[in-house]
Image (cartoon, rainbow, N blue to C red; front, side, top):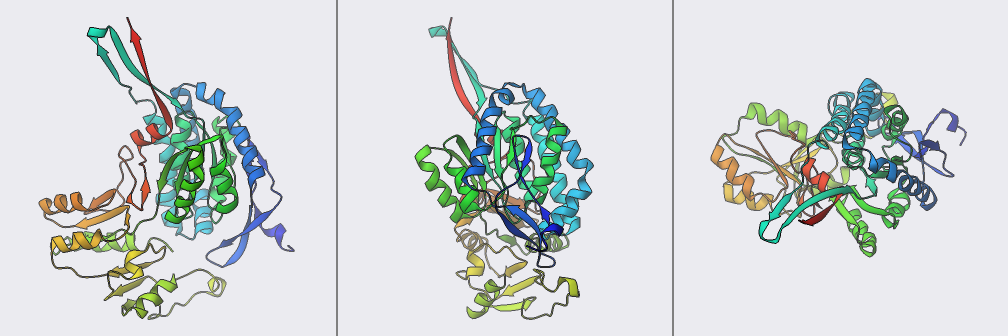
Amino acid sequence: MAHSKALLVLENFIAGKFVPCSSYIDSYNPSTGDVYCRVPDSGKEEVEAAVKAAKAAFPIWSSKSPLERSQILNKLADLIEHDLEAFAQAESKDQGKTITFARTVDIPRAVYNFRFFASSILHHTTECTEMATMGCVHYTSRAPVGVAGLISPWNLPLYLLTWKIAPAIACGNTVVAKPSEMTSVTAWMMCKLLEKAGVPHGVVNIVFGTGPRAGEALVCHPDVLLISFTGSTMTAQRIMEKSAPHCKRLSLELGGKNPAIVFDDADLSQCIPTTLRSSFANQVRSYVKKAQAEGARVLCGEGVDSLTLPPGNQKGYFMLPTVIVEVKDESCCMQEEIFGPVTCVVAFDTEEEVIERANSVKYGLAATVWSSNVGRVHRVAQRLQSGLVWTNCWLVRDLNLPFGGMKASGIGREGAKDSYEFFTEVKTITIKH
């Protein structure tokens, strides 16, 4: 390409070194619609090299004490935090989210992921029981599994990538990670800091590329013993099929269609601005057209209001926040995940009714409930088929507690205890005395 010299060109990070790839794919700046970056189009060869490096690094890394690993994770957190503004600018340009959101949510959370697991790895306990009549003591021990395959999505690039890398390496595993090919830049930037943080070569390997090539090669590799994936339910089904012959351990955090239930006694001064943020946080026009064809009405946004953009952004991927009303429960807009600033507003009459309707979708990742009635929020939260229910708030997370979905929203949970159990093997030891 004639303009390739002006583009940012990423390289895979394998065995502590940046390695060029034989082929590349274009990555677009969503605010302009122009190609601004070239991402490795990795396949079996690159994945094989990364797994080989991770496997070679495992004995040394797994033999380090939790304290030694903790210190390295904290150092990496410090380095990312030092460059927070550069990471935020890059995440905004690459993914399309606002600089403010990247600066205040994405990158700080990536920093905190490393700090959190650097701390939690120091405080886990094991079980011990005694059988006095048999003269036996039983206890458990935990050990890292080996090479972990980590696949993260485009919507929260560094945030969710570090949510996987941090517990995996804190537990003593080595990793081969594949970020989304659409949002790879901040992962590449993080690789530049690994050696300075003291991460030994081969402990963290990043292979860029698409799901069908790099992702499938990673999932199918016999030396990758576990897979942690965040993404679509359809892709997860493929991962399960390909992992089955190897009996791999899987953690799958999948799609969601998260209801926000607002009762008539809700504090609207808190509810409205928070629900607006949760509804329009991501940046899908076909869904709006389908809803209109089904008889729904667009209250504002797409097809109703005009969007004027500066000349430099007219090819960008912009869409007005859109509110749809009079939409049927069976509509695709009510049943399917929409990664865009589109929300559907529907009325309900009773508590029983709204619970049944909220549970009528195939997903069960998260939900919000707004009410000043304490008994009601407890009742509704208990009955919603969601792995996480926020009441009178949104996106407030204690990383000690489990995160994950029900139904088609995933398998397994992530958090301090759950991630520790996923990324380690437990062994029961019996001593007769």
